[in-house]
Length: 59
Image 1 (tube, rainbow, N blue to C red):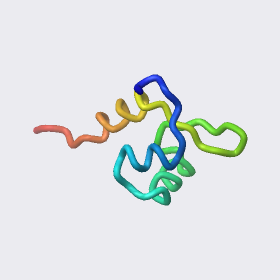
Image 2 (cartoon, rainbow, N blue to C red; image 1 turned 135 degrees about the vertical axis):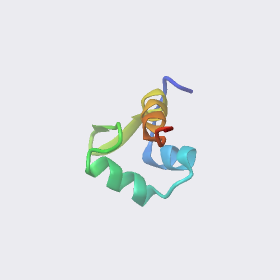
Image 3 (cartoon, rainbow, N blue to C red; image 1 turned 120 degrees about the vertical axis):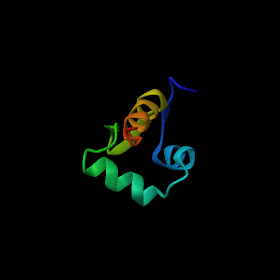
């Protein structure tokens, strides 16, 4: 599954957040995504790496 392209519905389900939240992150360029034919697509591997970077830093 890590090399597949996912739709907005699939990635929202994967991340357990709303589609609206995913749309906002994409439109602001804050989440790794590509647009194909006017629709957002996501690579799980890239999203997982992005999430890892979002974790709070340990002091």
